[in-house]
Image (tube, rainbow, N blue to C red; front, side):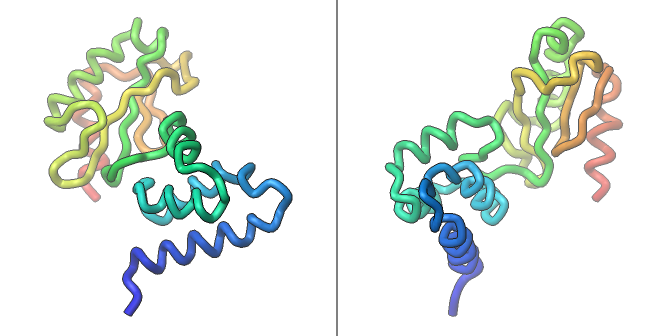
Length: 161
């Protein structure tokens, strides 16, 4: 019997086969990594090795691309990803205090996942919403002009799922 992981791996291989017919299949590396992360939630060593073989690209290149881009996860993440912008505008307007408050509330450090698997906390260099500083992004939604007093209410809205 095929496991869920094996089924996902077969789906990824099928996706790669559909794009590998072009002249430069390695040019689709980013889209393949996105597909893999969509299927598995993060990029495992096994998955990156499969991608390397399927695209005839050195595994080191796959690792280099996956570790360079902020979007790709190299370890499991929570159901919700919290990114605190630490760009200049956000930092000046109190992002450090927001980050500290979130860490205290969730009892995790940067890059960690809460014990219940609900949240992962990250730091971002810039989220591109400087006019709303300080900014926190949860999943794909931006929350701006926040204060430390706003943190509990914001996190509570995601805790009621």
